[in-house]
Length: 329
Image 1: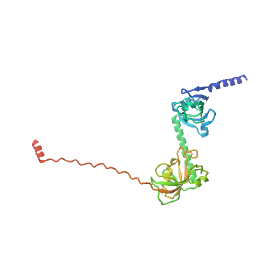
Image 2 (image 1 turned 180 degrees about the horizontal axis):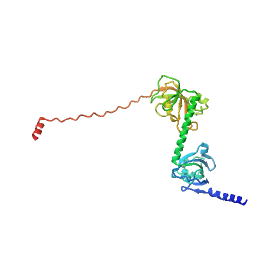
Image 3 (image 1 turned 60 degrees about the vertical axis):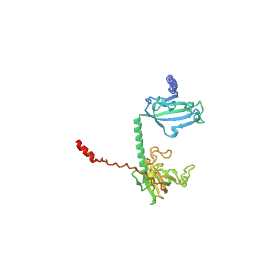
């Protein structure tokens, strides 16, 4: 019994020491909540961590837990108390800490930018938990492996969709797949032409994420406040739409309808456009090329030709000079 009580007392005495509030060299007030035996983070390391930022009254300003994924950054020399770099180098993998950042310091010199829900003299409370510590080489190798896995999964999903729906697609060298549903022998767009396009954009699982057609938007319960439902204007070759659109629309004639199956490499790539378009997502677009407006022909400036080189002119030798030259010889 005495032994159990002694252990309890020692644990109670150790807790305040571990949770002691301290300050970094730059003045950030911090408390290490959990400290393991992992090596300390050092400059140059890539860290993956969870973070929550709250007001003094526990109102959540930001949370990676709510966002659904942690933050990753490279640890560098601290420039100010707000960057937390001085705190990171006190921690290791699986450690956690609480940092108080004074609102007055954060908005010093630009107090007018302080949101109304923050008050002078208060703090932003930042809770950190370090999930992973890696060297740059380790982080890059892990990212490349994840990218390869996601690319393979994307290819499999696209192929399965095509097989399940028994689609007869044509594939271009870039990887764009398309089905022309309504062919047209009319004008095809060239660089500089303005195209009027109606479309419905879907993910492979059938979720509609964008449409220029009101009936389709309503059917999908798509919320697009302030959207004018009409064909959008796209200038071919300007690069203002994803590559899959530019390539796919160039294959169509005015009045054509088609389905474009656009891989992420020609769409939103490794970043996607969350929360609907995730990284490495193949997208489906039902498009109608309503009209093609020919652009102004760009006449290249005339090429200035370099002046022709004149043949060297031999000086004429007069009879008098020739006679004098012979006499001298």
